[in-house]
Image 1 (spheres, rainbow, N blue to C red):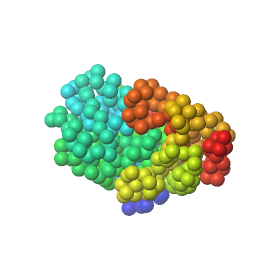
Image 2 (image 1 turned 60 degrees about the horizontal axis):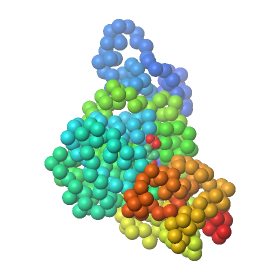
Image 3 (image 1 turned 180 degrees about the horizontal axis):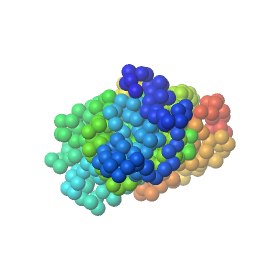
Image 4 (image 1 turned 45 degrees about the horizontal axis):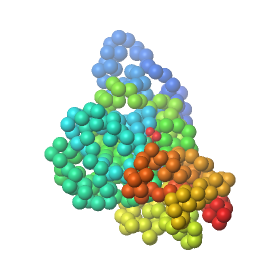
Length: 396
Ligand SMILES: *Cc1c(COP(=O)(O)O)cnc(C)c1O
């Protein structure tokens, strides 16, 4: 499809394939394998496994539609879908690194990503140095001769720190590392890291791409050479493949991606501004607020602040801070108490006892995740109703 179409057109149209039945909506190809006209046709297809359809661990038409649409939205040449976001992280490391190689990563990461870098890949001799994502000197100082990859998540979870993608991309290029950006929190509707110097964009499609909390999925987007020569051979052999059904759900989700993310960002900004004025609140973390320490960078690289707002309740002691946070959470009637995010339904989380509960109190404090902290992933409900839902516990 013509790359010059605008984002919203690509989100609805890019990647569509039609079968001989001329269906209008994308078809779900629930088939594990494909048949051939002859032995010669089978031989030819297996030789050309990137293009021909042979077996759904390799390629599937519904999955191909998802891949082509996401590649178009991120402005990348090619995409490989995976069964989840974590499967995408596993694949990008396993396909491009080997024993003795070194990774430099932001320390503000999704919890399971930290687990992969610090406990799983180390078993295969791949080590990671964690750095403050906002401190360029730390990125530079962590580089070793064997550094092969830079890994970044921005905005970070749950404190919404913003790292400068362009500046980190320059350092990565200087040292010849592959720069991978987890673009889960913004989605391509708000931020396109490949245009800012990233080599690979990684997604948990489970979040905003689906947007309605239904399926797991993941993806890697990058150059045709990297995706087809590195990622594809790994995924087709190891098998962390996306199912055709999930790909179809994600295709439908992407059609409304920018509508949802823009409205969720507007709701989040309204709620963040209001929270900032509330006497029970110590601090609000939201990249769309002028008070955010990296507001200028957010404005430069994101179209809006995104749907995630975190805020910290006041309290004299840790116990009191936790009690205050739990009171706000328990007093809500609309917000769903759950760890997921990116849904049309607003979700509310107490990071220090759930998503970050396995960290020691010292590590948690050092990461700035205090007992009074609440993470809100704002949905599509009426912003006034969400405010009223939070106000009940804040005033209690
Ligand atoms: C959820 C998430 C992941 C992992 O994705 P799954 O689809 O749950 O495997 C990775 N990174 C970020 C930022 C996430 O929010």
